[in-house]
Length: 240
Ligand SMILES: C[S@@+](CC[C@H](N)C(=O)[O-])C[C@H]1O[C@@H](n2cnc3c(N)ncnc32)[C@H](O)[C@@H]1O
Image (cartoon, rainbow, N blue to C red):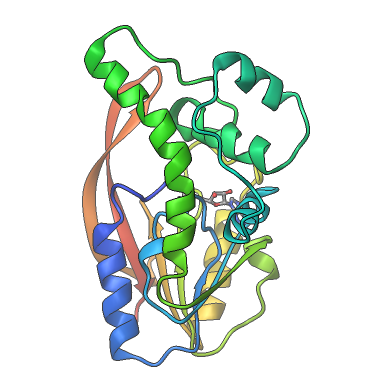
């Protein structure tokens, strides 16, 4: 599934770190409160995974796919894109709102097929990303049971002996549709609290001083007008 800020292409090292930690510790469960398009979740190996996101209908879409209650279309034309946008708010609306939109941004404009053959090859990936959504949901179940929930990360109870991976909206970047006023300070306070009895990893460009980077990567971020901006992405955990 095409998704703004998704870790499908750049998440390999993060998945490796999480899976190594899971192998050498006996965590009760894997928790992912910002699951987005499942870029990380689908390859994390734990028999109990609890994954959530605040975006309305995202968990419902994955549950519908997992239960065989939703058939993914092979292609969506520009005309259909418009109709679905202003139609019923259901799993099709959620899937198309991300996957058929420019940069995977929620209803960010239809991804047209360009005339240039090389670019067209990429745009052809519209069908691929639609179909891959089912594969990604299925992959989540490879290692055990998964629950997809719609909730604010703040509603998650204080846990014990779990491994928690957070991929929140990054500070200073375009906010997500579901939480335009994401409070970054409150988020880090929540991470501190959960870190008292769990292992918590956070993907971000920056973190408060009581956190340390356990992995980093120089990434290119595409911006519409400003061109390409380079940033260093980190995986943080609290200092011990
Ligand atoms: C960087 S994306 C996660 C991408 C995901 N790791 C992937 O690979 O597709 C951040 C996610 O946080 C979600 N989000 C934003 N505010 C939230 C909140 N308060 N509680 C839970 N989820 C939230 C957004 O809907 C978005 O899916």
